[in-house]
Length: 345
Image (tube, rainbow, N blue to C red):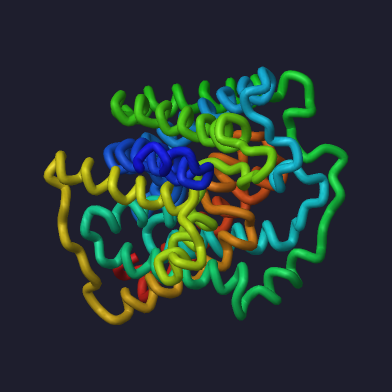
């Protein structure tokens, strides 16, 4: 019976997502992996955390470029590598997502990890995030997504990898910057090692879903680490599992939750945390809505577009990542100048 389960392609995708999620959950919980704290934390950017994030990005780019060059990953035709880029949707969504992650004090990736450790604020945010993202994809908010997505730009090339040498020059610059930041701001060696693991997991995701587990007669979506679409799939599967079988996305989310929980339990870091007042609840809820809608419009979150997408050197993903950072920094700057709003943020 067990062997029959593994013979089903969708179940293999589920198990593969679960394994990747476990690895990411462990690594992200220990290293506190989060773009928000790296660029827009309340007390200023955490440059040691930025070194960790950039290391993961640099490793992911190198690994993915090697995988695509050698044929281990086949990403042709993926939406990140489309010449037709919905630039208005991406920029708008990126700014919205960046604003939302400042309001919730963490991107949806970090909040997923925190939810597994007992943070009830994070639990509420990821539920609001998933509902909003699903509404933007297939529900009452989908006309907004369609409307904003109609304005596109036709790019001469969809990825910077088309520029000779860019696939290695760009990650080299990123890794040199990460190395300098790590030395200057004393990034923990363990966190840097775990960021390398995260970068390799991104590449493994692309390889596994595009070649190793790809069935030409019944193709599944080519994807890697992400949280926007996987959370919507997990939400829908939770509510209607008999109508929608679990696949890669559900396995990934489940793996992250289990991995983060086990890591926190082993490190005695499980702790129940809740809201302190109604204003905080309102702010976190608003942030979840902004991240849910923004993540869909931008084509992904800080991991889906920012790490997995940029690892392909996709121009669309790079625009999404930059707009997320701009949105986060702008909102953090606005809050720092308004004491009444800043309390508790």
